[in-house]
Length: 166
Ligand code: MN
Image (cartoon, rainbow, N blue to C red):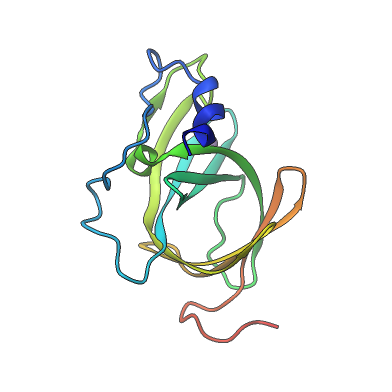
């Protein structure tokens, strides 16, 4: 599983960036324990890089599977946004906030925009459906691979997790 962090490490100089290096096996402090029905934690970070975007990260097999969402995670049912798959991040990134210095990969301020946990509804290659339970983001989200590193992030259901739209 360590291999999944190879790209993450290769892009960073840990003497310069405040970002976490090693995977952290223990649960980060901000959640006491994962609720019984949850499959993992998630975080959405607001990243003031050269282009402002939001990073969605889902805990999976000891790392954070990640997508950059240029327009932010949609909050309205039926709304779809481009999500660009990016390198897996270490679990320590779940509560990372800070300023990545100029000249470093992803330079700019990183703020936690939302976090919580998720439940996996369905998963197969190129398609992932989850229920996100956070402070700002709640409900059913579908991620569909559309080619290359491009995915579509689609909020399919209403706030109550009720009826499918189609
Ligand atoms: Mn980013």
